[in-house]
Length: 602
Image 1: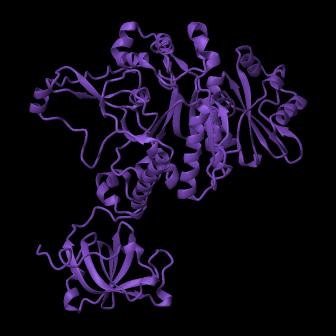
Image 2 (image 1 turned 180 degrees about the horizontal axis):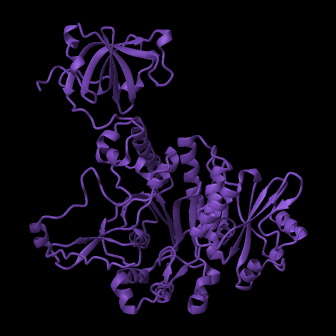
Image 3 (image 1 turned 120 degrees about the horizontal axis):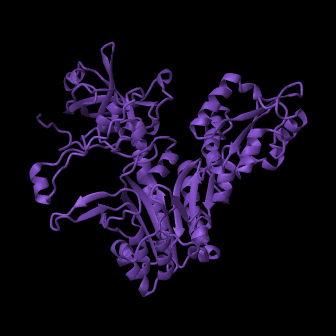
């Protein structure tokens, strides 16, 4: 295509979405994509779009400079020269920011013709598979352009705030040593060292601790991380962390600095005053919410009524309590919302979560109580249980009985799903909470060994340190670990680290790592601990998840320019894809087809 005056001589003067009534009578040059074009009685009305929004352009095709415009297709790239005019009062649109003005075009030039697009940009009904295949088209939508701009501004604000607090931004390697103690690594074969592999770094954990040993003192990085793990709506195989580490700090110091960062981000991007952020222990969160990511906008929480249920005469309760189980209650207003069919459906869902069943007590308008357990539990006892649970007139109390680990998934489901269905969640204000004192270790029954709940570099609470020497008490050790939770999403997680070699070796021993394994996997790090390590701690924010909450979406793919599907595929580029044979030969790699899983006959 022959290039006209635009680009070479006539340069863009404004973005489409920034034009207002104050620009009236200004001559402007705009460049962008044709969002829509309409023929109204000889005049053409074009919506011209760029990253800032769109503006209406009025064209007279009878003019020599404009006669070809009607042949330009949607999503074609054009340049327009014209004058900004105020729209007639009855034609002002309040739906767009540029609704008070329009451009009277004097010249319009086609810069790049587009084929008919597979879907209309901004179409909310397009399938996700199609939108991901043509991601570059979907990214033209105002919704995604806004999210990309938000991400940019958050990046800059984080850098500004942390730099002002004496943090130094340091880039650490992406190609690193494989660490099989965490999630699955993405392995990268080395051509120069056949049979050896790098791993794409899951987190710069040991690297940032080495920076503390190096005397950097305060470090941060917008770090790219990679984990080959099962995906979900708020997780991707590659993601970005706000990675932070600090020397000579306690838990409170790390929490305070990151609370201040929350306050700054929410004031700037959501105009919300966060204030002080409460904290609760992991044990309390699980006991009341059944999850370590409670949504504090939801008023629902469990109450332990085991002492009241004891001796009530209901065999199911008695058996549970004999097995060291508990009886928990949840109270809902408006018992009339819980019909028999709905309660049956809720019970089925609870069973899928691993609980044996569900019991309920309704308080009726006439002051009586109704429950499937009324044939086993006397009315006065039934009423006492109801009132102890916190029930009032016209309420319904749901009762869950079992071992704590059986109750937690069911309770988490009931609190989150029924809280939404009943309209109990206060969605006009984000709610934060710090969760602290996580377990240091958890038992992996499949491999019959202990594993780190957070990572093996997390320090135990000082008062629990001696328990590392007692195999029978490993499950009771609490960690100097903390998570920042917002609206039920874990935004950040971190800990105070182990800075003494003997303690680090004791943790490795509790994890059943032999001396040889420790040397092979972490020898370089243990060596570094010999040369003076300051007490230090840090945190890592899931930056994409942070953007998801700030933007108000519930899908992390909305805030990533080129995301993968939930099955880790890039539909746009068809990655992952087979490598060429000569590439494999160069790396000394042979592809062996995995055997099919054995078929189980009915």
